[in-house]
Image (tube, rainbow, N blue to C red; front, side, top):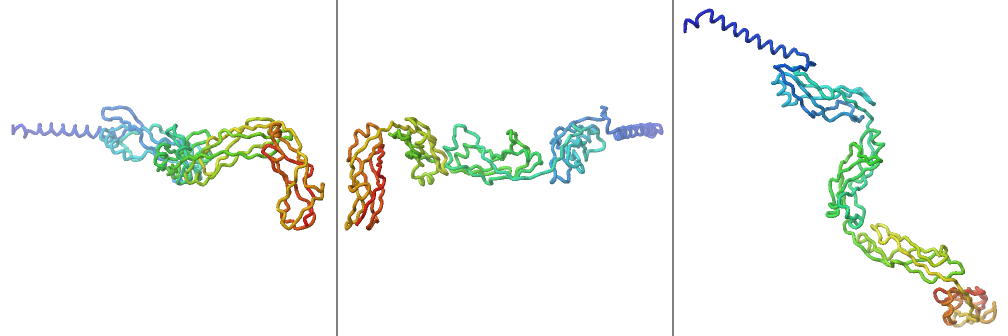
Length: 414
């Protein structure tokens, strides 16, 4: 055995084998390294692997002046090469995939997707390898926020909140392209109605921005959420409904009665506010528009800082009758506020304190009316002595109009 190992031929054969093995190894590595990165042909010494949803970065130094649209969030990256290199690349992913938008300016552009940091031993394919982008000027404006209550449809906010829910803050700054800012129509804070009704406050309600057709806009909102508080001490209180009249009926009509149905209404609001309200504003009925007995619908006025009033309208039943006339002659004219040490003398239209009184009313009313039901007088308060004219004043039952041909009388106080 020792002689065999010491044989020069054995030494030559072993050396040749090692030389061939070393040459083969180096040749294979050189072939893999020198392959063009554009070649995607399978071979026994290479593998292929795809990395999905790799983040796509935007390189734009003037990003505070522009807004970019059309760039996808991620791309797929396929690499081919030695297994050991691919394994390390896929595991660490310490490379960048990006689009360079510097020096492009405003407008539409088709941009190549590039990569940086991937080993030169690998062939790389990015899908997509180009993207269409739009670069627009950036704008920022302030908008007020509305409350959008969502959730339980069986809840009526008017039954829950004593006043309008309050937002903090009440407005936000919206940043986007000039086109997007022009499209902003509504800014809403999305608030859970059941949650707000239970606790009276909600924190971190998200803010959403919509165009005029209700489509949500992808813009930057600052702040992106707001807080909302509400007064949940709503209560109710009932008040009588009254009326007042304006205008006059035609001369041939007499007002018999006005009745309201319902005769009361309920206000809903905070306890403090309802305690401040003593009565409802009377409903107005214009008699000049009434030509016969009728029923009309009249709106009730809702006081300020009150949630609502129920009902919102009442029916007013108006009864009128055709008027008839009558006359009571020689009604005594009374004198009021005459000083005890003074005397009064009637001069015109006659020397006696009497006059004829015309009555206008319904036939039934006048048929039951007597001389004692009416009163006619003059008031001489403040008159010391001398002659003067005094206005004649009348008083009678409801529904009866009193008048006289003598609206004034001439008297002398001594």
